[in-house]
Amino acid sequence: MQATVPAGLDRKEAEVYLRLDSKRLPRHIAIIMDGNGRWARRRHLPRIAGHRAGVSSVRSTVETAAHIGIPALTLYAFSEENWKKRPASEVSFLMGLLCRYLKAEVPTLNKNNIRLEYIGRLHELPPSVQEKMQWAREATAHNAGMVLTLALNYSARTELVDAFRSIVDAAARNGGLSHLEIDEDAVSRHLYTRHLPDPDLVVRTSGEMRLSNFLLWQLAYAEIYVTPTLWPEFRGVHLLEGIEEYQKRERRYGGLAGDASQAHSSDHPRTRVSAPHAVKTGRS
Ligand code: IPE
Ligand code: IPE
Ligand code: MG
Image (cartoon, rainbow, N blue to C red; front, side, top):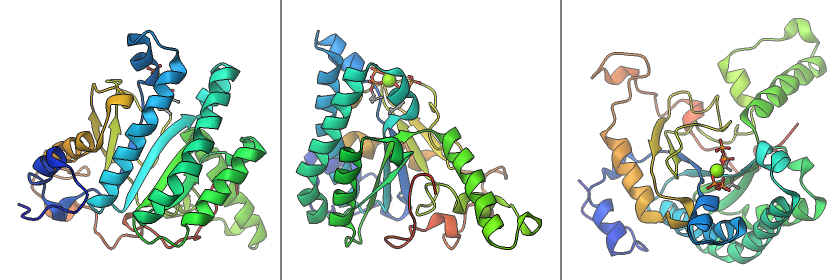
């Protein structure tokens, strides 16, 4: 049990935090931020009002995760399918919202020692948005605390396709395909997430029980926490409740109950967050 509460938590967060084991926090939490549209519809507001309201949830969740020392947080901001299938007006609102978020949030990210990264087919985003993203990444690159990764125009299947292409390209540059060796670490090293450990915990808001093409490789052994809370109502305290639930789970990795040797070693490369600028994201 934990006796001290980190600075920055409010009273409700502190209450949940005190029930956590601070030595067993997830190294990487991934969140599928869902339910903005339903939140707006319940208030007879346009869908975009839900996206706008969701920014406060991002702020609260990011700050709480950083305050308690989570090494990596990844947020599914919009999928490749959202990008292709939603009305142009909604997509362009989301682009504007992202730019405003980045501009407004960089000082707070710096204050909290948070480094910003992105995953997804970033080169398909509008050039002006890419510029803003690059600016925000560079403005936070010196931070050594939590890595905040935004998944933008992201699809796990596309990521795997890009990884296979990248493996083949690398082999072609390095003596030809007869030297090609593929194992799990090789695949991981060619994913957009090569700078991150695999998530220990994936949270989905709004009660939907699916992964919607998010981090399919990386979530192989993640604990799944689904909450009925809609994203615009989600706050840091809900993240702590998810971590509390996570800590009640027994992770077996295919082994037998109570066998600690089955747990992933903290020395494993895929459990560490790598140094800034170790990778480029997007298609390489
Ligand atoms: C999640 O909220 C945000 C994005 C996918 C961009 P939705 O827009 O999917 O909200 P619902 O699922 O329609 O309520
Ligand atoms: C998943 O939510 C993508 C994000 C939260 C960014 P969706 O709302 O797009 O997922 P589906 O369509 O319900 O599976
Ligand atoms: Mg949705």
